[in-house]
Image 1 (cartoon, rainbow, N blue to C red):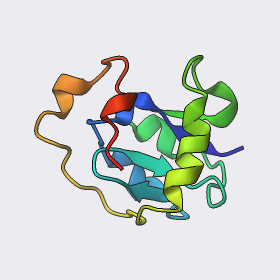
Image 2: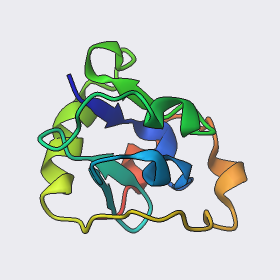
Image 3: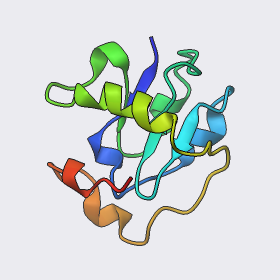
Length: 107
């Protein structure tokens, strides 16, 4: 069961999670990260590294965010792999925990 990056990552894009991933399954878009479900080995290392709680096991994705399972699978095929931590956007803290950010996702 792969892990999934959910809505809270949009416009926050903290990358603490990518450095602990042993199989390089994270992919980076303009303002969001995704996990490739075909590469994820369910090691659980990334989940506690996310400072804003945006990563969940596929079976534990919060209600209303189930669409992020398919979105992670789709975008991981389009976006490049990211393996090293980067600084978050300057305004990341302002976006933490805000609801309804899906329309702000940049592809």
